[in-house]
Length: 126
Image 1 (cartoon, rainbow, N blue to C red):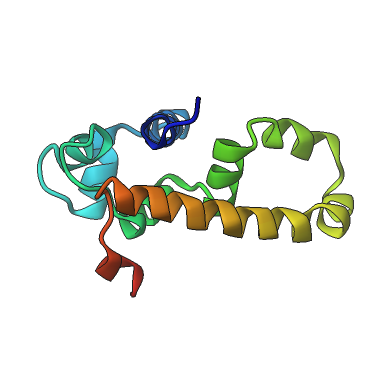
Image 2 (cartoon, rainbow, N blue to C red; image 1 turned 90 degrees about the horizontal axis):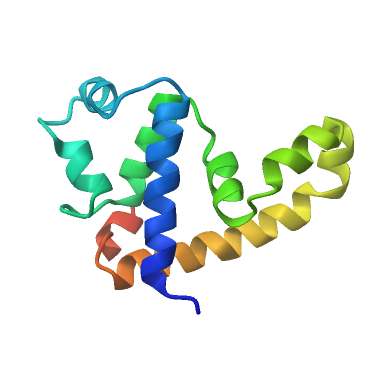
């Protein structure tokens, strides 16, 4: 059974894993971003509300494209499929449908995050 809580947990777990996979520690990311002591840990453990702009900053800092991150979150086979198909073929056949799907998934994610009060509506207006 789907629950928004499980989606948020998957999201935070993937973000923590990506930080490690890219060779960073949470401390390095927080220092690079100029955030206070243990701030990133509090964000990743739901002690503080994580905003979408903060997610994008973390992804940029660790060198992950948001599209890649969200594709992996919602299409776990995406990295495997990407490596099995040539780049021009992927762009010609998969990209438009994936972008439409990603837009819908991001809208759903934003709704869930807003409902869980992990982001605020005013953060989305920027």
